[in-house]
Amino acid sequence: MSHRAHFCVQASTVACLLLAIALTAGCGTKGRAITGQIKIDGTVMSLQPKQVVKVSFVPADPEVFSQMSPSDRAAFTTTVGKDGTFTFTSVLPGHYWATVADFPMFPYGDRLSEHFRKEPKSIEIDLNAVKPVDLNLKREWYREPRTKR
Image (cartoon, rainbow, N blue to C red; front, side):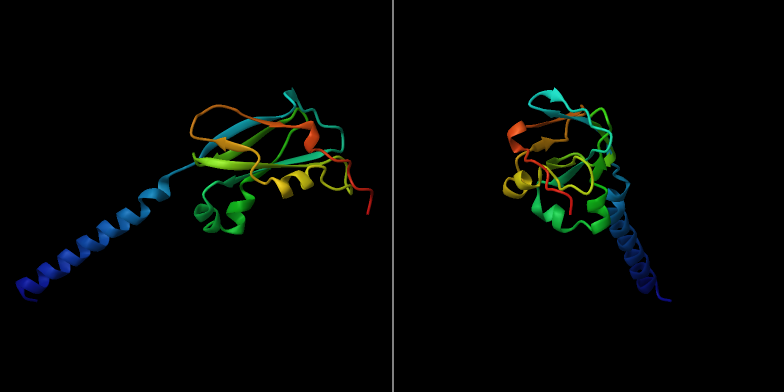
């Protein structure tokens, strides 16, 4: 192999390595645990025995959201504890919209669905700061649950 050909092989190998490093640099970025609490008109929510409440975070940037797989989107949903608290194990910092689903007792419907259908972007949260998240719902957002199906 000529000296020039050997140099070209080395240069292309180095270029490939640099490209691989650049592409994987963000892969080590981990999210952090986020804790929070649901409140209704400023009062901490406590759940009834068969009540199920779920919180979802949706990235405020539509481009980020469109690039998420269904499993990524599912990771942005968690179940609220009986004391109104919730935890996400790994969320990247950024701006999100939060939605809440409140099922008083299956098979009744979600009491907040009408509000979040009309106003899906009613709760904006900033997860750039490391602090617990308070999601304050308004009593007026609630409607009576649908009857059993």
